[in-house]
Length: 480
Image (cartoon, rainbow, N blue to C red; front, side, top):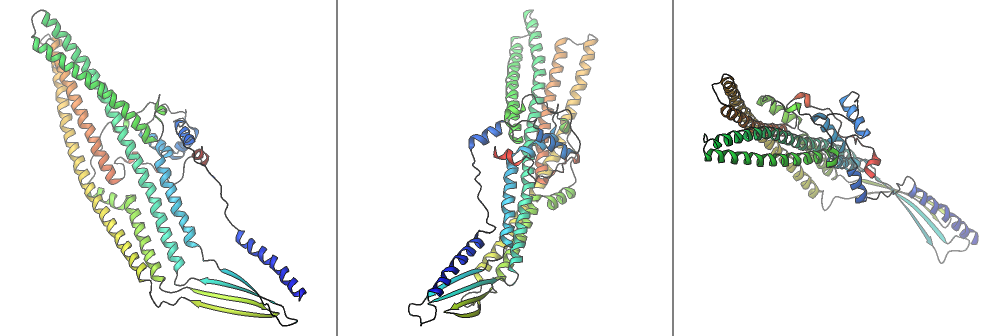
């Protein structure tokens, strides 16, 4: 009896050790990664446009070496790449994709078997027979009806939707950058034109003061000229304010602190002229076939379809195999169990109905987005065409003012016009240039609205083939 009990005691330790080893094998370990606001703020404030990592990112996407570094001049293309390198919105979109992509691991996992150990002690065992009965059993689940495949298909489609959402986030980053870039361009041009207008108006005031002193000008004319000069100076102050605001917005759109823009020279060659309006069929085809948000919703719809197929498959119960072994007081007993859930009270009707409703909802969302895109595109195209027409009229007025100013200059040179007349013609030309700039600014806004509807640049030269799915900065830079 004691020998048999000793045998049982010796068997307990290997069994326990074996179970512990099975449970610990392949376990992931936790690594703390504290998030300190002071660190992240300091890392943001340390961002600059002369970062060596940014240089490498630019060279990779521009497909040529950059020299000298830092860049002497930044255009919209290089600023866009800097925004793709730094902007946190893309980091968030990539992180979301990583979260959804991790679901593919979960979807592909097979159910683990369950092991059981049931020792029994008999208080009254016959003489010469062990008082212990040791039972071992397994429960091996077997999925049926292709459930694992449907889970994997659903996870794949959801991952694709999240990947396409990175492209949507990239376009939104570019759109905000373009808005700030256009505003800075307009504010700078406005400031320059107002400075010229201020100089001309100051000259008119000086000429009128001289005439007033000899009685050749009226006091109301003199007062009106001074008021106009002060109004221009107020507009000049406002233009400088808008320029500073646009510069700060540009830094925010890139994802760098305002200090990073100090000493940066910008070129605005890409917006000297407005590109022609594309044809409606090309616009419609481009928007409906290539917008990443539409493609992402299509992927979500396919995921909803896979989810519905999964719920339909769950009508068919999984199998459970239960082999077992029992050492019953010296007698070896083997068993093979089999179990299945009986679909007596429900056949998964509720989850199937929910999955069908989610599929219908996703389809409705796609149709809604598609209709919204078509409406947005038609409005943007009509607005851009009207803006181009208005810009053509403003160009005609400016050309007429230039012709008139040239004519007055010729008259002045021939002695047929005085300096006040010549300066007044110059003021009319500057006023026309400001009006043309305002019209051009509205045309740029209409252009951006059309590009947002397309989620594609109107100028092919501005298109960048950038892999925004890959985090461009090293991981350690995120943690600092």
